[in-house]
Image (cartoon, rainbow, N blue to C red; front, side, top):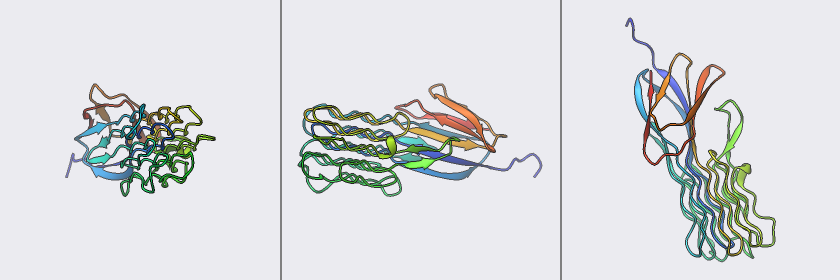
Amino acid sequence: MSGVRPPITIEYLVVAGGGGGGYTIGGGAGAGGLLTSSFSSPRAGIFAVTVGAGGAGKTNAGGTGAVGVNSKFFIVTANGGGGGGSESVKGADGGSGGGTGRNGGASSGAGLAGQGNNGAPYPGGNLGGGGGGKGAAGSGKAGGTGFASSISGASLFYAGGGGGCDFYGPGGAGGSSVGGTGGVGSNPGGNATANRGGGGGGGGNYAAGGNGGSGVVIFTLPPTATATFSAGVTQTSAIVGANRVYTVTATSTTDETVTFS
């Protein structure tokens, strides 16, 4: 039919905010859930887009670090990462689950199938369990590995779990270097990398957990299509190969919009 343009293919990467690490020999937090795929869309459409913030690390006894905030694109929602458990507390559930704090037992936070993996249970001794990542569950004090993507034009890791505390050191490694490192002695857990969705590191003795990393939404359009964003969106665009790539980074508590044409 004359004048009707064919639909476009949109590829996306949606990463939620990572959870916050646990307090006092705390577990590392789970990474934000990660979803990536593609879909066909009409040339004209208005879609929701939200980037979730990372959860705050726990700063006092009991409970877990804060769960990360969900990210959304179109009809896809990635769930925030589970907070790391404080001493004697298991990690929280989330996109990936949080690791369990010292003396917290043999269970941990559960990850969502397709989005992430479980945190590690209490490893024994003066350790906290590592948080789960998109690529693997937490193991001992180490955070689970993340997921490598080249959608932005550079190969980068996203959604690595936070490392658990090791009182005598070294702290558990953050997954794929985007999750926060676990605390040592009485030092706090490390913060996760912004806009990569990693979990925060577990805090040392009477020390706070690290903050989770904020998420990100990245999507591609063919160069003949354009995207217009609502006023609250902070984004960048670049031509990568045969596509235009949009990267949305600023966190929001409400849905913003993107219009395709």
